[in-house]
Length: 260
Length: 330
Image (cartoon, rainbow over all chains, first blue to last red; front, side):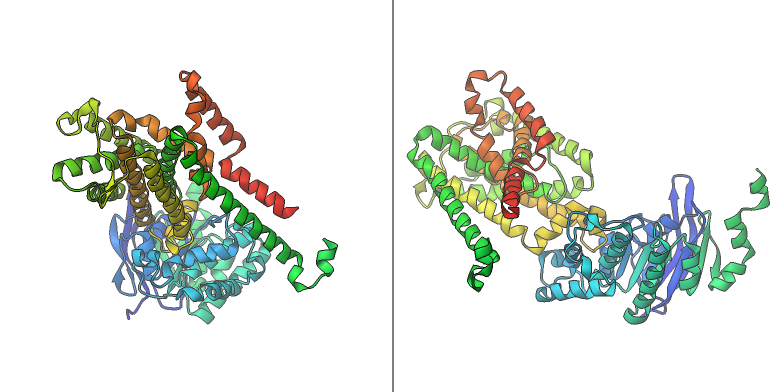
C-alpha cells in the first residue's frame, strides 16, 4: 500500500506549442477530499482528462496506489479503481435509471464476457447480486423513487446525480469529479455537499473535485490545489488558499490587466 | 373489463392480458412456421427468393451486430466476398471438403476482421464509414486484378454445391432447409447475445461511448469483438451465396451490395433485433415486382429509403412496435 492513493508527478500536456498543463505535481491521501481550482482556461479540464486517461500526457506520471497508470486507456484506469464523472449530464439517456446503473456494473460481473475482456480484478459481483447492487447504489444517492424513469427525462440536477451513481457503480477507490456543482441550484448544491461528505465518511471514498463553485470547494475540500495558466501556484487548506495573495490576484485579475 | 376485475384471482386483468398475449405469441409462431414452410410448396421461383432472403437475413444480422456496437459499416460486401471467395479457393487450393473450406474461410474472415478492426475502429462516425467503403473497394479491386487466382472479372463458375458427409445441398428444396436453419440460427444468436452481459455492454457502448469507457468497458475491444462477429456472419452469407448460385464475380460484391444491406437494415429497423430479418424479407423479393422497370427500380429504392427515414425512423419493426404498444395501452 502506497503512502498516497493518487500521485501526480511532473505532469505536462502540450497541444502543439501551447502548454495547457506545466509540470503539475500533487498527491491525494486515502479518504481525502481535494479540490483542483483555477480561473477559466487554467488547464483544470486538461489535467483532469490527462489523469483519467482521456488524453495521453506529454510528460510526467500518474500513480494510483503506487501503480503507474500513465497513458492507460480510460476503461483500464477505471478498472484499476479510479472512476470519473462528467461535467455535463452524461447518462444512457433512453434507458431507465436502474438500467443505467446495470450498464455501469457490466465490467464487474464475475465470469461475464465483458469482465473477461476487461480483466478487472477487484470489486467483482456474482450475477445474482446485480439487482441488489443497483438498489444499494440508488439508496446511496437517494434516487430509488426514479428507478424506472428514463434517464433522459430526469431534471438536470438528478441527471448529474445519476452520473455520480454511475461512477460509484464501478466501485472505485477514488472518484474524479468534473465540476459536480455546475448548473445546480442552491438546494441541489447543499444536497451535493451532503452526498460527497457521506461518500467520504461512510464509504471511505477519496475524492478529487475540479470545480468552479468556490463556496462548495471551500466548504468541503480539506486541501486545494490552485492552477493558473497550467501551473500550480498554490496548495493548502481552504483558509490558506483564501489568504494567499497570488490566488486572490489570479482570480480578481492584476491591476495591469484590469486597465488594459 | 369490470367483470374481469370483480372475478377471482386467476382472471385479474393482468392474467387475462398475459393469457391473451400468450395466445397471440402462439398464433404468431404458427403463422411464422407456415410462412417459412410455404416456399417448399410454392415452386422453384418462390424457393429461389426465399433462399436469397435467408442469406440476406444472415448477412444483415452481421451488419446489425456491428451497428449495435456503435459503428456503421459501409463496406459490408467485403466480408461477404471474403467468405464466398475464401470457401471456393480454400477447397480448390487445398483439396479439402466444402464444409472444411467454409470453416477455413470463416476463420480467415475473422482474422482479417480482427486485424482490420483493431486499426480502423479507432475512427468514429463518418470516418469509419468512409474507411469501410474504401476497404470494400480494395477487396473488389484485388479480386478483379488477381485474375490468375480469382478468375478476375470473369469470376469463378461451376462452384460445386455444399455437401455434408456425402449429403449434397444440390436442389433448391435442400438448400432452402440449410439457409432457413442458418437464418433462424442467426436471429436466435442476436436475441441471445443481446440478452447477455456482452451484448448489453455493446448496447451501452453504442448508446454513449465516452460514458461506457468511463464505466470500465473498453469501447475498442468491444467494437472489435462485434466487428469480428458481424463480419463472420457476413462471411457465412458469402459461403452460402457462392454455394447456392454456383458463380461468383467481383461485381456481385460491389458498392451496390453494401448499400442494399444498409437499406435492408434501416427499412427493417435498426433498433429492433428483428429489423434485419424484416428488412431482408421485404426487400429481397422487391426487385421482382419492378422487373418491368429495371431502369427505375433504384429510384423507387431511394424514394422508399428517404420516406422511411423521414416518417418511420424505427423502420418496419418500429411500426409493429407502435401497434403492439397501442394494443397494450387500449
